[in-house]
Image 1 (cartoon, one colour):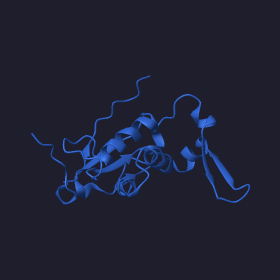
Image 2 (cartoon, rainbow, N blue to C red):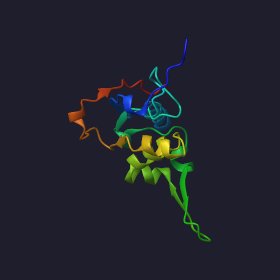
Image 3 (cartoon, rainbow, N blue to C red):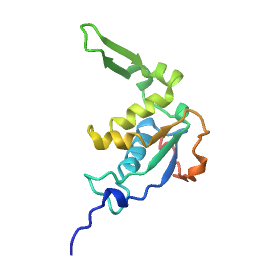
Length: 147
């Protein structure tokens, strides 16, 4: 018996919709990362991009548990002395909730050319509407918050 390996030109990509409404930001990001990497497929191969397209809607209604809205920060550095910029997640979720979801999913993907190609297939929307109805995406059921 031999192991079958996926070939890049034979990969069939589907479209999925994830609803972040009432669900934890991190749990939704995990589902999106698994779909983007293709780990849900039986022909998953680590060195081949076998993932699907993912649309995440209702990011503005995603939940950050505990006191993360106040305590968690998005940090970036310009490379210059004193160039650290910090933004509280409360401000990010009010102004750009789709950015918070994108950062969470990007953190779960590989930091190489494979991960960059997978990240390009992520589409994030703050509201319930998206522009990809023509692709006939399959809706992934929302499990809801556990607590």
